[in-house]
Image 1 (cartoon, rainbow, N blue to C red):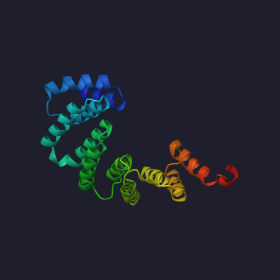
Image 2 (image 1 turned 60 degrees about the vertical axis):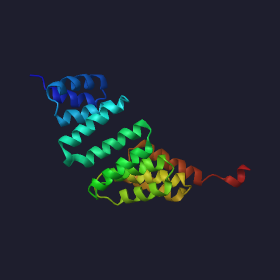
Image 3 (image 1 turned 135 degrees about the horizontal axis):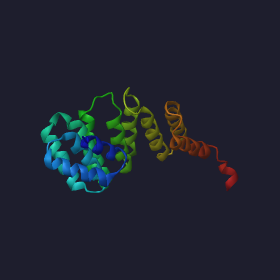
Image 4 (image 1 turned 90 degrees about the vertical axis):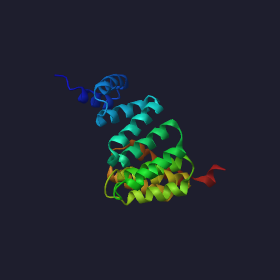
Length: 195
């Protein structure tokens, strides 16, 4: 027998959006309250810029399983971030942050990212600094994002230190290595010789 739910999950993980959408649409006709399938489908709908449909699914999931609200708030933040509505994304990430365990960096990272995208660099710095203090989640990404904010503020020495910490945690991430190279190059420019 075919495990349709597994096919839907694998299609989502492999960015096979049309396959995931078609399978999920059909499955949900017969199993309208299947939350895991709804989550996969909603995520794919966001990736395909079908925001209103995704929003309806997230609202339905909140009705069915209100105890998952923190997760769904985070997904709503992603939806609005992808839609380009950073203010609304910030609102939902803040709600996710308030619902999340204080020791998980994820909600802080997402919140700080949309704050930075809006030019709220001081707020983004504080949020990413908080993320670096967590013991769960992608602490390496928190240091990288803090480094990006500090670089944007022109605080290159501090940014370099953050990138070094991110690389120490995950030494194989090329983007972080390039960011460190960038600030180190900028710090070592012989500016007086270039005028």
